[in-house]
Image 1 (tube, rainbow, N blue to C red):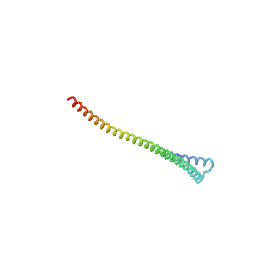
Image 2 (image 1 turned 90 degrees about the vertical axis):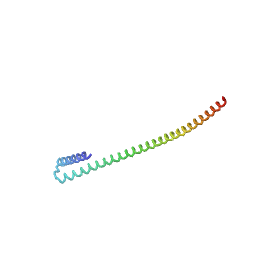
Image 3 (image 1 turned 120 degrees about the vertical axis):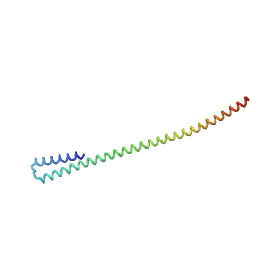
Image 4 (image 1 turned 135 degrees about the vertical axis):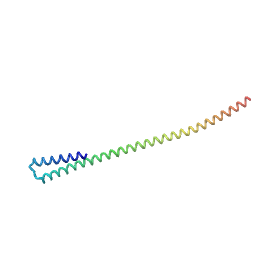
Length: 119
């Protein structure tokens, strides 16, 4: 970008000198004034273009940040739902283990009764 700016300045100065010489203006002061006017105009244009690019990039960055934030919130919601499911499964597993233990105890009692009946 800096190299392009320097090339632009050199080109403008050369163009101004050539135009001034063609128009018969050979005064160094006049050529200098015209060159200064042209440079100020070009630099102003370049500055506004850079400013426009910076604004566009800022807007794009803000949009990207907003989209990323939305995705992160969505992911957090999904993670919370998964964690709730895991917690629920843990509770169900514990309940089922208790139920199995209780059923096993009842089977053992029935086995004991059946054994007592035969004896």
